[in-house]
Image (cartoon, rainbow, N blue to C red):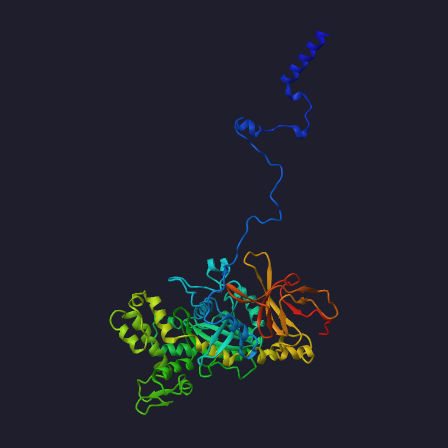
Length: 535
């Protein structure tokens, strides 16, 4: 027995000497040393066999957009803004569009600063209040169109509710412009005074005419003609006139409406420089003369400030023929030369003659303000001289229809049902007591990117928070109602770029941000009452 055991031991020893002889399963084969063998027994090594990270939970919570945490101070009461929503005569729905970097966002910044006393641009940076996405801030270019609702006064001091949508200028984001145009009654086309009409400007004119919208023009960055190109005043006038003529040529090419003509004399062209807070129409500039000298009928004066019209100082009358060979056109003499003088004084001679010149204009600056750098000082002087952007408001009020006036054209163009039906008539009259119809054209994500809110225009009826509604998708027809869903409206907001004003109801003619109806919407949708739809 003992001998057998010894033989077994010998066989075991023999196997250990020749490890390649025993049968080893494939999965038990060891090709490489273990981590413990590599790092030594004193190092703890852990191998995780499976990914224990939850699949649904995001890697980290992200914030995509820049939003105000509290409602900022405004020069008007929020209740006043909400009251204006009930009067569709005093509402203007406007799209600001134009070529890339022609100053749309900067212009909205000026309007935001005018209505929000505590929101100011930093010393050396643009505010870019409507560039709410972090990617927009980083790249310095608008990617999404952003709605802003503010109350603005006209030259006479009457307040209007402006729903403005600031759209991207880049040609790749033309769909954002389309979404804005679809819910607007008019468009303000921004054109850089130095660059003139560009490719995208032409495309936008064609698009606005196709959408049957009222077209107005804002010739922006007029400071570039003076400070950058250093053009003489007469050449600057020719440049501005050429831009107006070029736009009119494009409009006549795409539109059959012969009444659609742009001219500063008609009041549908304004001039501005967003960087230096300058904005005027002929009427608002004439009003500055009337306020300074008194006893001037500024509306009649404004009619003589464009075209080949000259002022004869001897007879004190306007003539179509130049009194002398050195006479300047009225626009050059009364508008461009004063503007040139203000800019030249601030840029050229701050220390000696500037305080005296400003006193003559009734502008009083402190010693600290006079020590500012040139750009902030120029902005401050122009802001005090030109005041609020009332010329822009006048232009929009006079030449862009209110939702009530523009509703019929809008419905005829966009509504696929019968305009003569009860529903069609309610929308054509912009009736806040009619059946609910709301057209949503955009979806805005929450600042954490988890949820979407639908943005649109109430065409008839009044939408209430907590109301059950039927959301009709793009493929909905009366025969095939599959693309529709009953939803409950959550909260309602008025959007002002970086903050939202919560409201409990929104009547016809206004823009609204709706919570809780985003689930069935792909791009655009119609929000209506969940009754038997005869439309």
